[in-house]
Amino acid sequence: MSTTSERPDRHDPATLHELSTAVHAGNRSVGGAIRTPIVMANAYDLPEDPSTLDWSGTDVPLYTRNSGVNQLGLQAKLAALEHAEDAVALASGVAALHALFLTTLRSGDHVVATDVGYVALRRLLGEILPERYGVESTFVNTSDLAAVEAAIRPNTKLIHTETITNPTIRVADIAALAEIAHRHGALLSVDSTFTPPGWYRPLEDGADLVIHSLTKYINGHGDALGGAVLGSKELVAPVRCDAMVDVGGVISPFNAWLILRGSVTLPLRLRQHIAGARAVAEALDADPRIALVRHPDLKSHPQHELAARQFPNGSGAMIAFSLDGGPDVQNQFVSNLRLITSAVSLGHDESLIVQVSHDEPHVEAFSDIFQRNGLLRLSIGLEDPADLVEDVQQALDLTLPR
Ligand SMILES: *Cc1c(COP(=O)(O)O)cnc(C)c1O
Image: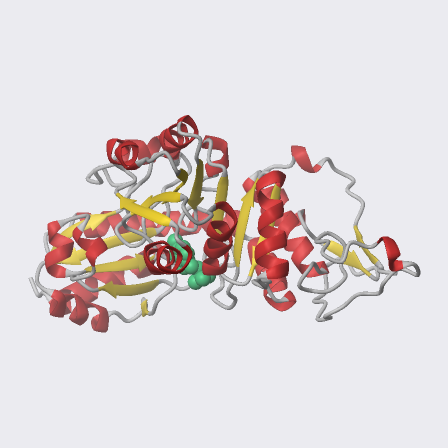
């Protein structure tokens, strides 16, 4: 039999504050060790009489695609952090998006989704599901509630948005979208990757399902891919059975272990991310060589008031901006940076910048300046804010001397 056990809680987990939850939730004892080891086993001991065992079960370690020590621990931790009844951990954020749509949509159903969002979202909902599986989709600006309302059809089963859009930093009003969805008998799903728990919990504003790319802030160290779907037990159970056990999007024990470990410092890291983001956003906002900068904490952001109300602890550490001048100027700026790294991904310990081409359709949807110049998407890491501001300023001075 398995020697796995959760260490008996001497505290009531429901009364813990966020910092304590991040340290303690999901940590399971194996063989007496006080930290969960990595259990790289494909299969687990069966009971002497397996005749009553549910071979498709997902709660007892049996086979690692059904369940495992490290997945179970990570799932418990994620649910505790997000204040969700249940969570399923998957191989990547895109596996979580796919799991969400596979489970909530059938042929002939309609989904209303944000017109600006993660690239794979467009392919999944714009091409793969409509062309091969008969799902209908409409892309709208989910910050425009009238446009969302107008896009609803009798067969609309799901509204899907990002809390803050990737890459244009537009903010969605989650409580208002939940009200619209529920009035029309649909579910609201929210990609909250840009706003992990600590900054925001969409379920508390009425969202039915939340997805995260764990690859980003929740792991936080840039060394493992993972994804999760969170919500009520009723909605998450089919995601676990269908997308994990029978479609196979399971996370590896090693990645689950890395992400569980990384998430211990999530609340602490978010404080530093936001301090750095505010310092850099303000420096960019004050510089006349910057054509446009978007961060929801800036008063110049069109949805600053919504962001301040919805994200009282800080509205993320992602900044979109562009320098005066065309795409070549943006490229020059990036090559002049010395500390900030040019690479995709976000939410890592190290600050990352990526150029988003000026002719991508979703850029057009936000601003004519971004459309003309292209935009730079900056993920503020954990470096000292003074060093980040200094790097941006020296690169600006080299690119556009005063
Ligand atoms: C990165 C990202 C994803 C995809 O996550 P992966 O872990 O890379 O598969 C989905 N949504 C958003 C908002 C992201 O930033």
